Image 1 (cartoon, rainbow, N blue to C red):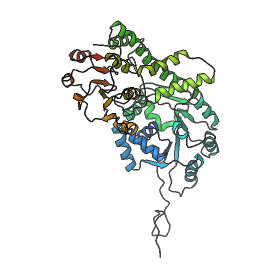
Image 2 (spheres, rainbow, N blue to C red; image 1 turned 90 degrees about the vertical axis):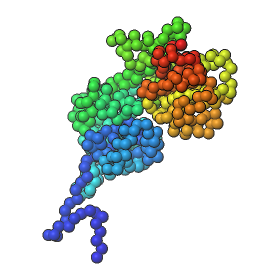
Image 3 (cartoon, rainbow, N blue to C red; image 1 turned 30 degrees about the horizontal axis):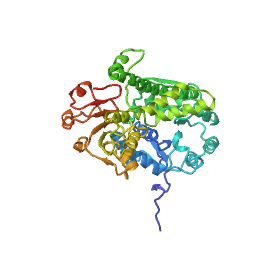
Image 4 (cartoon, rainbow, N blue to C red; image 1 turned 120 degrees about the vertical axis):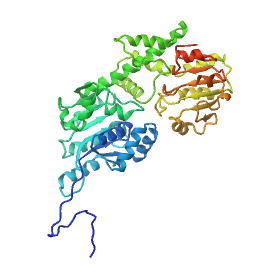
Length: 460
């Protein structure tokens, strides 16, 4: 007689069979973005079981791209091994996903997990599911009491409109204004600012699994979804405006022989101004600020509204990325063909491994147009630069910042972590000019240089 234990039921000596024990309830997340990955790890750390549905290829690429997030990556691997996080292939439509958990709810003998909330990362699902399709699936679901969270950067009012189309009361919007690239896990576990958009006012008690995040936030605010969307976009636009304002002032500082870094510190002493986002440099990159400004542009254009300040912020930021090259060109009076330069850093900010929107891209393109050999040291962004430019003969990625310095005629600094002390002695062995697009060097370091120094709004 065949004995099949695949249903994992145990036989009692008295002849009856015990019911299977259900798996723990889970949070179902849909998306492959860093926000989705971070949320999965944080929820697992809070004792939740997580089923993450994503395009497996894109998910693997994202995890590899964020390899510089060592803590997050280690926790992800551990929770996957423990099956606290289970990543699954994204089904072709939302109906298939929802049906799996409805079946578990309606069949007590089914050893499946029961979903407690759905968290949809809108940026990730756009290419996989049609908007009408996933909304219809959720509206036809029998699980109308379950909360649905949405996250992502959309045009103003878009998430609010989606929430109105969802025929359920417990719909929420969580913008990731708190996420810090390079420290994603800790910045979500202890958010600086927690914003929650609610379709139904004063209903956050239905998100009890997120209570620890709300309680640990240094500041928090709940409001209707449209207001939270507008607040998210306004915060990001203000940060971008501050950066572009300081970069515009840095050009005037150059003409007045004033150090913009000292001016920034003085401005920060005024409580009305504050000290954040006042550092002049090559501008801002990454995904969040540029995406936010793009969505604001689309929102204003759709309503036939002119936003000249927003247009100026975008223009200044793009032009600023080429400023350090122009300083280089002027220093050598245009005689720059066939030189060799060293570039330190390639990511859009120190501590990150992403180069999206980084000044290194226009800089490399301009240097290569003059047949300039580029030696690039960028430990965290090296993989991404290899993927993007691995076939470029004028690019050589080096593993040490002072490697091959004897072959270079200039140094560019794009992103340098303040935790890594610059060795002025090694730099002075070659007395070459430094073009500091990040204003990474201190006044004492600049004073100790043998060669020339050109920063953004500050010169030797």
